[in-house]
Image 1 (cartoon, rainbow, N blue to C red):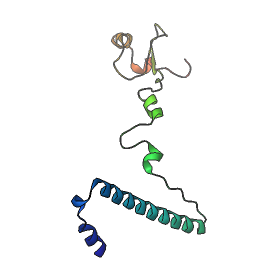
Image 2 (image 1 turned 60 degrees about the vertical axis):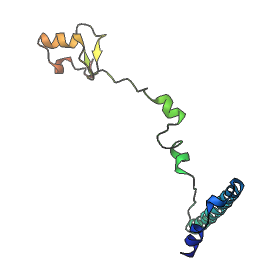
Image 3 (image 1 turned 30 degrees about the vertical axis):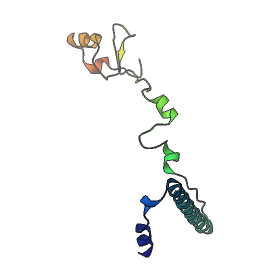
Image 4 (image 1 turned 135 degrees about the horizontal axis):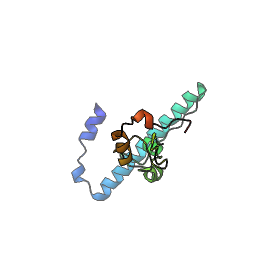
Length: 126
């Protein structure tokens, strides 16, 4: 508790810009030294147990930060593999439909003529 009282008693408003920068540098250095010390301790413990520890910031491992995509993710955005057709027009085999989205006119015409979706479905023999 004494440490947080000491911090609470620091009057930051009375410090000059240079003083604030110096304090910030000292805090960052102290924090980095503490982190490095703890990492070394974790590595020693892991080494004794037969493990290897690799620590890095999660943002560096999975991307560039919250909500941002890597360049490869951005390049792939919107580029999907085409879906294979599920139905084929018996009158014109060049016309097919994946079963997604709006039904094409040829399919509607075939259904109106009495065909069923099962009859228009592409089988492995086709």
